[in-house]
Image (cartoon, rainbow, N blue to C red; front, side, top):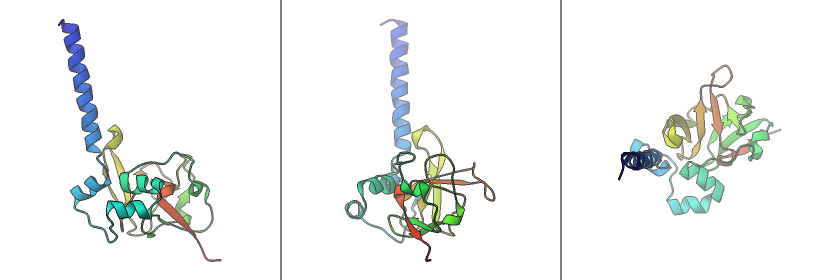
Length: 169
């Protein structure tokens, strides 16, 4: 085997190993939550979550999926009210903190007190801050440092991971 072919095979193998390691770093909500030893007030078995949630909700809340941008009706929800976790009904965000981030996902500059927790997310070959429900651990989205005042944060949430409760008239 000539040197060029050998280098190509070595480079291919190293690239494949790198992709495998990236894949392993973001192994899913169950492994991440177990590793962090975080406990939640609302827990269910995987089979129970499958029965309680729609397939799209299950993919996002329990396996850190992401809905397509501009696919959630909650992106265009502008009434006064509360956005809650679709997994456990915990109140997460007030409509007063929602803003149009032009990203295609419902975005907020501040969660309600003690409603969400964050953890490091190393999936997709990048480092981000994952946001999950503090009551059931459901994956909601990510938080970024490019939001509006007063916090400068953008909580970019999957609409399918939430429900909307209109304010009483």
